[in-house]
Length: 89
Image 1 (cartoon, rainbow, N blue to C red):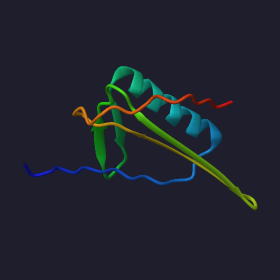
Image 2 (cartoon, one colour):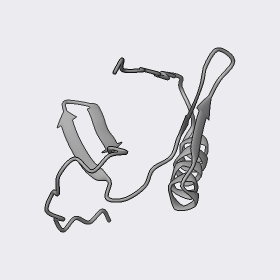
Image 3 (cartoon, rainbow, N blue to C red):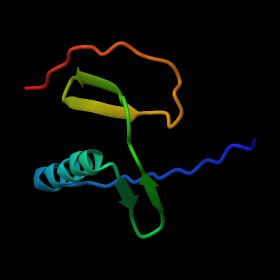
């Protein structure tokens, strides 16, 4: 079977309020089971379901701060992963 790949990438400067709105839209989409990412050039629709794999990284170096959040899942049952405790304050 031939694999099908779709991707979306967007990068821009945003203020804190805009980032909050984007993150709220993402969490709302996860709750509803459908997230749509789009801009003037591209669009992708994702349907998160089942157990989602969460990866969070955070770094501070000199005056540069960065954190990444990666959420992934497989539509087919790809084996079980153990659920771990995690918190953000």
